[in-house]
Amino acid sequence: MDFTQVVLGLALLAVSSLTFAGPSALESHVLVYVLTGSALVIGAGALCADLARDARV
Image (cartoon, rainbow, N blue to C red; front, top):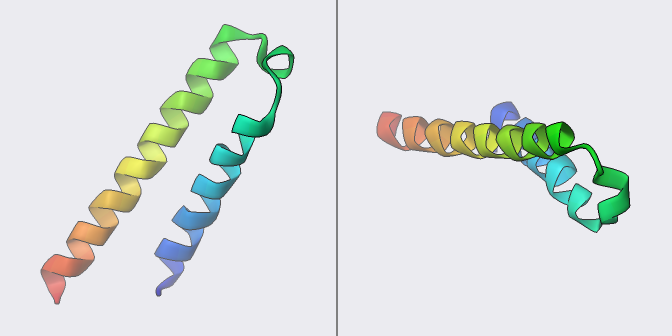
């Protein structure tokens, strides 16, 4: 595993750990949209990094 995969994995773990937070902790709709968007961007980045790594091999 390279550094990029480790960082992306840790970022996804941090975002997904927010699912354990109660709904009252995430009352702001803007915060929910930001978290959802960041999770999608991080996931897409991880997918693209993996595909690019596989294409080089």
